[in-house]
Image 1 (tube, rainbow, N blue to C red):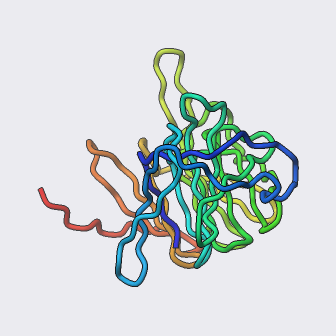
Image 2 (cartoon, rainbow, N blue to C red; image 1 turned 45 degrees about the vertical axis):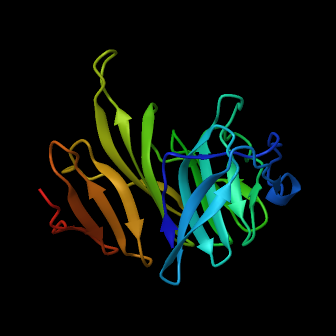
Length: 241
């Protein structure tokens, strides 16, 4: 199960220690609850609220990678120099040190306790293998870019969607971009028929079953599905007028 929540306050105690390929547990300590906030979760048909620590940070994304494991990332609060990473161990949220080079985590996604990924606003990626972080580079896009969403669909497949700024100063225009990661590295998967605003959100159920929500309030939403070979437009739900 993979999900994303926004506009919820979270935080963690202390500052992270950057140590390349070092276990997250070396710097992971229980988050100090200063202004409790809650994260809703669904289990057995019942919604429950789990408290996180509120330190002024803003939750950007959360992903469940196992029955008793979940990750949450956010933007920094007023007194923090970097955004927090929190891991749920089945009982409480633990703060985790940021991997080297990561300051502003934006999206977290994963498929298992040994396959969790975190992305920053520029689409740089880091993978957690259950013991340590490893840098996985970024899509072959020229900066500046703006990450829209990312989705891990399996142990050897990751998708990233965003926009590339190709406008002149004072007249920004963002070109929709889509990239795919495999063990051989990143490759651009942008479609020539894509039009701004491009992909806004990604979702996946099984490997090879990627879904994308495109469009905006002006153009209207479009849902597309990737079956492992091609994209297909799917009829959108009948939203009330």
